[in-house]
Length: 107
Image (cartoon, rainbow, N blue to C red):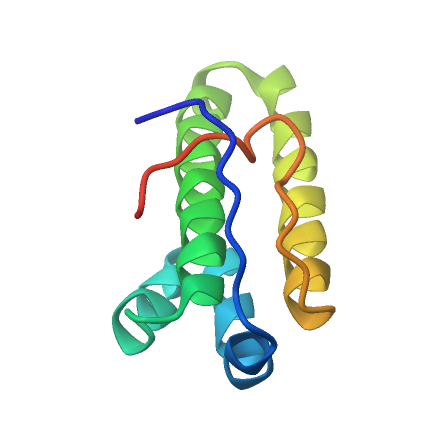
């Protein structure tokens, strides 16, 4: 896992063809659909990576909030990040999510 900022340049055709399927990356485990269905899409790979990181953060927050109830507010933050990611997909943007956007897991 790396904390370096990733810059990708998908083509407009890639964005147009994969915009809708890429937004699934931000809806929990559904990141697996674009991960395997659009392996060659730079746009999808970028958003799948963002979705995996968000999913893992959500899992950790869920586990911790089981023991500490105050952490539940962080679930709201992950929901906001999910909405930001979906909006970026629909608008065809390659923009990192706040705080976690520079983490790269999926290449």
